[in-house]
Every structure is written in C-alpha cells, then in structure tokens.
Image (tube, rainbow, N blue to C red):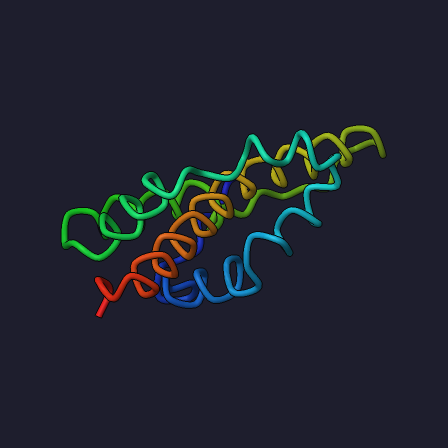
Length: 121
C-alpha cells in the first residue's frame, strides 16, 4: 500500500529548507560515497539555475510539486515479513527519496548562484 502525503503536510518551501538547507556538502556526506563518485551527482551551474528558475514559474512549480509527490512525499510501508524484505523496502524508499532530495539540492544551488549574480532579486 502506498500513501502519498498531502502537499499541505509537506509544502515545497519546507522540503527545500529541510533537504537543501544545509548545502551540497552536507548532502554529499549523506551519500556515504567516495568523493570521486559524489562529484558526478552535483549538477552543473546551468542545470541548477534552470531548475531554480523552473520552480519559480507557475507551470514549473506544478512540475516540481509533482516530482516531490512521487519522491519525497511518498511514504511506503517498509516493514516486511522478514528482515531482508524490510531492508529491501527501506533501501527502495531511500532511493526514491534521494531523487527528490537531489532535485531540491540543485534548486538551492541555483538560487544561491542567481543571488550571487544579483539576478535572483
């Protein structure tokens, strides 16, 4: 059974603060991968700016909200009949959430870049 949390319970602004609030460096620590592998996950400055700008347009916001619905807001029961089944379900959910967290991180990076250049004001 899949339960999708409502947008009012997990608004995008709070998701951005929570997942992206500590910066890309903190996110890298969560991945528990060697630095040479983590570097592949950070978006280019261009991609980060585009994602941030997309999230601030009406249609783009709708897309980002939907992406959060199918990733970070998704709650799946992780308990299984065996410890292995429980671990597999938990790892699957972590992977699903990770996609949404990377999107939020990229948006935060884009906002920072635009604000540094004075274009985000």
